[in-house]
Amino acid sequence: MEIKDILARVDHTILSPTAAWEEVKQVLEDAWQMRCASACIPPSHVHKAADYVEGSVKICTVIGFPSGYSTTRTK
Image (tube, rainbow, N blue to C red; front, side):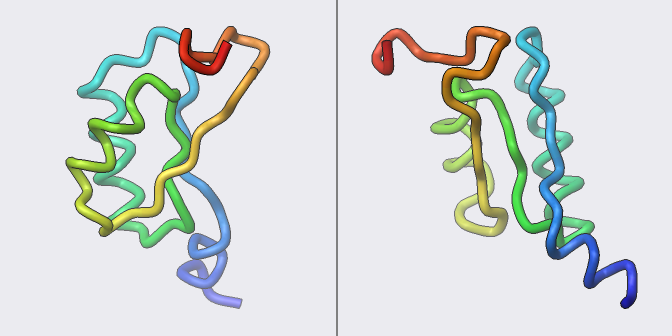
């Protein structure tokens, strides 16, 4: 199995509760360049990230993660 085949099956992540948009943006760009399965990011950045990548990267998130990753709307 080649590295590209492995990367196509893994998520590139940044799940720090203090992740700034610039950090999330870098993860999105890395995921696109490496052709990862998706970029897993905090829920608060999902809408902006979806607009930013325009479908070029799949985006995933976590809900109810131990770090308090639940938006007010979800709660």
